[in-house]
Length: 497
Image (cartoon, rainbow, N blue to C red; front, side, top):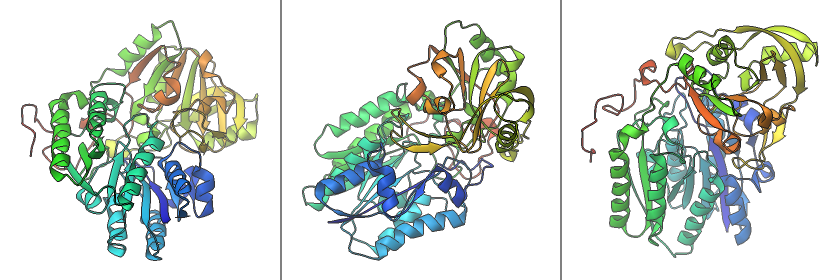
């Protein structure tokens, strides 16, 4: 047997001003050929699962590319074409028995609003009979082109995404059964007009906890090969953004359709639960100040790198300083220029910085506002570490040249590359133990739970300023299908069929 195994992943925030060029993929991880195996073998990724399945079968593997970039703005044409061409060209060489693809589901390129559907369509045009298994992030926006050009589809069922390997193994094993003639996959899918907010998709919380339990319940039927609910990515302003469900069954189309309808009905019945309720920033910080037992996790969710944030919005940090919170560890502020200043000054030096605020955000009519701070350079680092927590386990990551800046009350990790803080390594790699801090201010939404939930005595969500805001009134949607809840009043409407 000969398998193609490839990864091409990006969650595109079309409101983000951060460009997604090829270098951004290289910064996070762009591997080709044998380097793919070295990078992902033994990791908690679908690609790791695909490699293990191939090894079990003694199959030859073709690994043209494995690339992922931190969420950001539109993927530039050059980057999209480079990555997709590597995969398509490998398919064109022929001789493959199957393709196993580790994709995201919310990639939007400058010239292609459906990044994954476009890739799959090109593969299918070259190899009409090639069996294709695909894993998708739970925040994927599914499309008809995706459905039409895949054999097996499976989505993550956890957020934080600690089950990426499991999802890949499920999809890969189902495809192997299809290759052996043991099953004949059929796919049912559908959408509901819900633009669910990411803060309401944590799988330890309702309503997504129940939605994923329903998927697992459907999969207990031996005829159901995979059942997935995709919350979707609401900051991709494309027609297909929103909540969807996909069910893959063995032969029985009616059974797949019925299971998919049950999942969509359940989601529509809980549509109001997918909407985040706001609290004034000043009030939330005051609540945090009143808590005595730490660590208390504070979430600067509107500036979450993992959803395309700039990671240099200083609004929340300014409010913490105004209210006098002490013993706060911050991860992380993106400011390469500030890092260079601290690198030049050296450990122990006192410096005054105009920190952060380097990025304007025209999509929400916000200009970058640096915060002038004086403090000491506590530590310097190359920003590299290996993830030991339950998400991306075993992956090598880097924040680039990194500094720990101590203002007296705040210890701020300042990075040269964007990175969401979902692993303790964001602090420990630069010598700071988060277990002994009173507050942990994290520019994250839900992924922080992978590494930090076991430490948190309390968690408070802070509504700051940024392009990952959960305030829909700040985002100028132009392309998403309408009507859609909660952008439009559909509270009493039956589920569209």
